[in-house]
Length: 368
Image: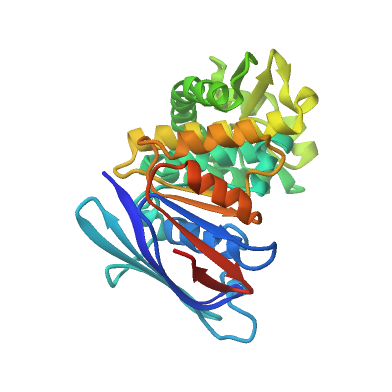
């Protein structure tokens, strides 16, 4: 099912005072200097899919300075159906989030309705930083097509928080309470592991395909999913083994919250050997593979947001990326860049409908 954002209206969102924008159903480009509002515009689109800002999860801090409320409205075409999503935030008032004027009672019920994949400079943490970033990558992807996964993740994190609290207590924890919490952890973790394992198995060949298509090289990229749940030993037994250590440390050292994805180029860990271009290519290939997998499993084709991603890539790699995303496999795309010439060349080579917007101090001006 096709998904397109036809119109976006913003009021007092970050540095954007007010705007209404109509989009192309294929490629939409935003050009402007850094700090002008391009990323804020992309963030507003992200907000409508995930019920929160990617830049600042504290809603009230996304209200434009000097204003008292922000509002985001998106008018989408989802298959044959028009869907209007509204989000409104006022300090000290519960967030309003609605679909076709019907307010959501649980934000989690909206996740996956408007699937979305984003690539931005902040995503370099996926390659360079610790395992938390790669787990987040898995969680954001799987939660968009599996509501049970999101519920299991919530249950696991609640149980983990409770166990960590027991590990910090000076007195010995009640053994019955501890056993119940660890059983809750294992039940949720078993489902989380199965879904993450399934995702990685489907994801890896797609990732390898896109890496080769972008780099046009003979580099071999591989992934390895690491989890305590891969062991035949139940998690409850593993937690008993590390109980004394966890009591000394004051936190839980086994479980789904320690999962990781190891990334290798030519059998070497990417963190130690990759160039900037290889890191960027890996990141983009991972996000393209995520898009492809979500397209297969979600009820609608995801939106694809590319926020200032072409820095540190040579012209050939940029050309291959544009060639890929402008093809039939990808749906509606939003691209930001500081370089007008770069965008003009991009649009010249993209044989599909496109719109260009200039962004200057929070004002968005269409150019065609």
